[in-house]
Image (cartoon, rainbow, N blue to C red; front, side):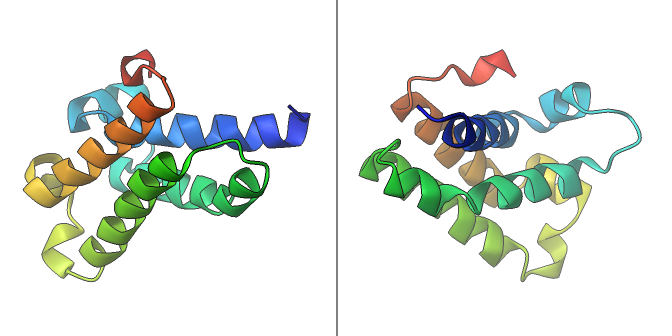
Length: 117
């Protein structure tokens, strides 16, 4: 695998690990000075942009892409609803927990342990 593609895959995996983690794990895994909500969503968004390159290289399966697209679609929907843009909602709301489940499913399909975050 080319280094550039390996780096893009690594960014995607890292963002999925972070996204699939509980809010408390996200807090623990990030520096104190960052806004957890913004950082997790931003990291996923940055990695999501590399998805077409990974698909072109046939690095990830259709099933993985499907789970990642579910994450992205639900994130985009949540960001249109003002009450879902809070730390409390990000911690407790079922819709954000569903995003975490989709991310965990993608990692499972990639055969990556999300607990390695």
